Length: 507
Image 1 (cartoon, rainbow, N blue to C red):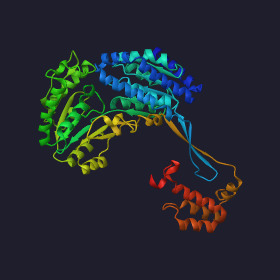
Image 2: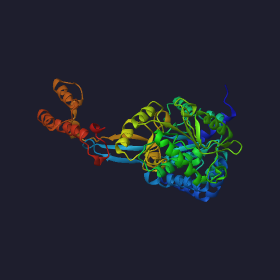
Image 3: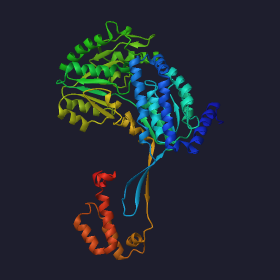
Image 4: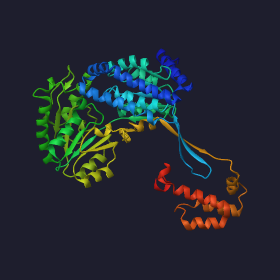
C-alpha cells in the first residue's frame, strides 16, 4: 500500500529533524544552552498570549497559569548547568581510566497532554534539548488554542532544523508513530500508553510513559482537620480535578468521614461562595463528552455534597460521594474531575491491603502524624511518588524524580532527572599500553596451565568479598602478577563513595 499524503508529510518532518541531528549541531553545549535561553525568552515575551490560550482551553485562572509558566521556566533555567559530555569517575584499574559518556539518544518524540498543555509538552522538551537530542513535539489536540500558539511561536525562537512541532489528532498521532524515533516520551492515559509502547516496540525504542491511575489519599483520626481538609480539597480541585496526581479517592474511618464532610462544606463555601458556578476560581471541564463521563460516575454512590453540573458551560460542582461500593464504576477508572469518593476502613492495615490489590498508583497521599503508620505505608505500598501531609507538592520539587510505576507509568523526569531520562550512559574503559601491567596480567591468556587455572579460580571466588587474609594469600602465592590482581579485587569491592560509583556489594 502506498504511503498516504499525511505519512509522507510526517516522513519529511522526521527526515528534516534527523538531518539536523546528523549535522552535529545539537551536540554543542553552547548551542543547547542558547536554545533553552530562547525558550525562556519565548515564555517571557508571550506570557499574556499563553494566559489567553490556556484560559480558552480550560478557563484556568491567571494565578494557576502563572504558576504553571514559572514551573516551565524553572525547567529551562535549571538545565544548562547539567549539560556535559563526559564525566571522569575514577581509576577503577591501575593505569586505566573509567568514564561515563553522556550520549544523547538521537531523535526524540514528545507527545504532550491536554490538562496542562504547555507544561506537559515543554518540560520534556527542555530535558531532551539539554541532553543534546533533536526533538519533534506534538501537543494535544484537545487543547487547540495552546497547541496553535506553540506551533506559531516555537519556530520563531528555536532552531527549525533540530526541533519541530506538529499538530493533529488520533489519526495524525498514529501516522507519526509509524516513523522511527530513538526515544519516545508520552504523557496521558494508560490505554493510549499501551498503544505508544506497542509502536515503540517495533524498533525497540526506549520510552518514558507518564500515565495516571487512581491515587489514594489516607487520612487517620489524629490529623489537624482544618489543615488536612484544605490541603486535600485544594489538591482535588486544582484544574477542577483534571490533574494526573489529584487525590482520586479518600480512605478514612466512619468517624473521620462525617467530620471531613462537614469541614469540606465549610471550606468549599469559603473558597467558591454560595454559587460555585459563578466562581472565577474554578476551572472548567475540557470537553462536553468529559462532563457526560463524570456525570455517569455520580450514580456510583450517595452524594454527600455537590453533584450539580452544566454540560453546555462544561462546569461541575465540587462533589463528595459516600456509600461507594468498592466495585463501582467510580472506583474502577481514574476520575479526572471534581468528584471525591470516600471509602471506609477502620485501620490502616486494611487500607494498605485494599490499595495493594489494585493497580499501582501514580501518587500516594498520607495524612497522619503517626511515624509508624508512615513507615508502614512507605515500606509496604508501591506508588510512583508519595506526599505526606499535603498533596501535589512532591511533583514540584526539581530534586525529586517524577514518574509512575506499573500501570501508572515507567521512567521519570523533572530537574536533573529530565536530563538523565534523555541521556544514554555510555560506559567507557580506556586502557593503557603499560608493559608492566600487561606482563602482570598474562595469566588471562591461553594456554591455561594448572597454575593459571588456580590463579583465575582464586580471582573468581569473591562471593564473600576479598578479605585481608585472601588478599595476602593471593599475593604470597602468585607474586607480582597477583599484586595487581589483588588490587583489582579490592578495588571492585571497596570503591569509596568519593569516586561516584556504588560498590557492587551495597547495590
